[in-house]
Length: 126
Image (tube, rainbow, N blue to C red):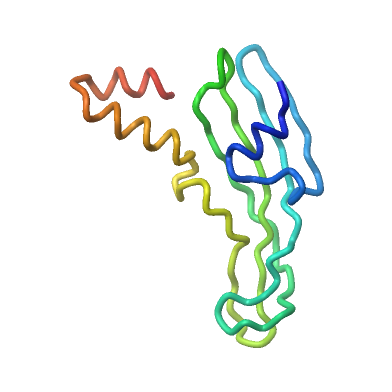
């Protein structure tokens, strides 16, 4: 399986990462990625050169890919603007704030439209 394809299908281009590691278990694929700090322009005052304040860890749980499920652990840079002193996190739009992918969220919404129990949906989608 091409792990870079898995990464980019979740909205994280592999070329935007400077550290990528992959681990596979019996039925789980784990991807560890560190995002390059390339969004230094302040989103509040448009100052061109914000500093990196810290790195925040995030997790994306995905739909199973074949027999395996995918979990992506990644670190995003958090910036601070020396001009306005506001902080902001590197922007990735492809996953929801609850750390699930948009495709998983859509599948869950579709499943809730059918007649089934919460327990069966939780069992199907972990």
